[in-house]
Image (cartoon, rainbow, N blue to C red; front, side, top):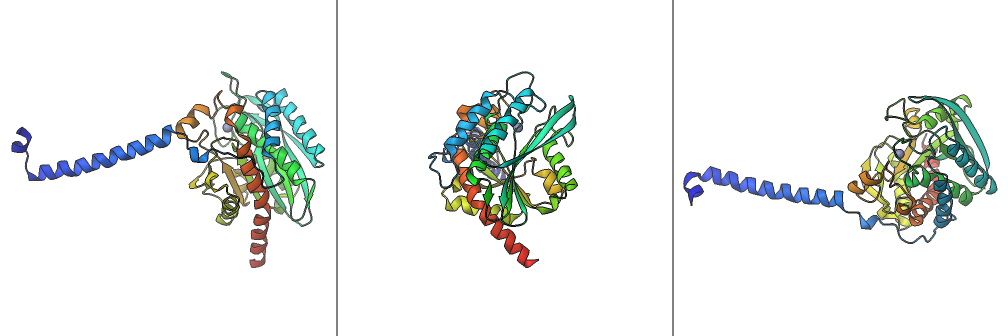
Amino acid sequence: MYWQETIGRSSLRFIGVAGVGTLIFLLLVAFGLKRIAYKDNNQRATAATGKSEFRGDRAFETLKKVVAIGPRPPGSPEAETLRQLIRSEVEAAGLEVRVIPFEADTPLGKRSMANLVAIVKGSQDGIIALSNHYDTKYFEEFRFVGANDGGSTAAWMIEMARALGPMRDGRTVWLIWFDGEEALRDWSSTDSLYGSREMVRHMRKTKELADLHALINVDMIGDCYLGIFRDAGAPSWLSNAIWKVAAELGHGRHFLAESRIVEDDHMPFRLAGKRAINLIDYEYGGSQLEHSNTWHTANDTIERVCPASLQAVGDVIYHALPAIERALDAQARLN
Ligand SMILES: [Zn+2]
């Protein structure tokens, strides 16, 4: 054949190496495409069987009410309607609620915003905060209801208030709903995290920041295909405590070994020297392709959120609280 006569031995060797290289390349592409294209069925949350006081079905019913309000961008009447819903539900569970209003300068002008804090009074000194954002990203072009992004955690936190109740043994727990997590225009250090940045300022002023022992932020945890990345910036003892409880409760497949760094409401606290972790499902729908079709789109609707996912994260955090406290106590003994 022609090519055998014209190419030498070294060229043949080159073709051989190139052939193996191409094969490896094609395999990698196929693997990558599979990861991008298909939902990770392993991450599909199933039974909403509770392993704590937290009830995923009840959280989901609350989420329906949240989504029915419509888009809830900062400063909107809908944001105020949601604040009233949070307040009435949480007060009905017997918890004290603080509203902390503030004005924020945004690329769209001044906006009135407010953070909410529900307090579970502890028997011991110190505060552990569970936080989330309740605002939805403002889009002019389409109706964004943020069932998962903004909605899921706002409802999840209301259910956590019901599960924990007004008092507990151990540290005081603050349940925080931040306003203005989303950028009004494009994400930047000044156009994002309005509520959490304000909260750090507020807690410095009231001197409560010194009492804050740890903060656990949750975001987008209602995804039916639930997969929460490890937070590469979090203290390892804190993620280990949570991941261990997840494995013990049989929710290990939703708490991934892979880690990511995602800028979120925990960041201002971390910058202030506080121990903080972000629990986020940053692959909405169980694949990168689904994520790009749903995240910050009109497809972020209630059909893509599952009570079982809310339940899984609820169970894990409910049981992780005492584990985190034991780890904090052990550290305090060392110091
Ligand atoms: Zn968002």
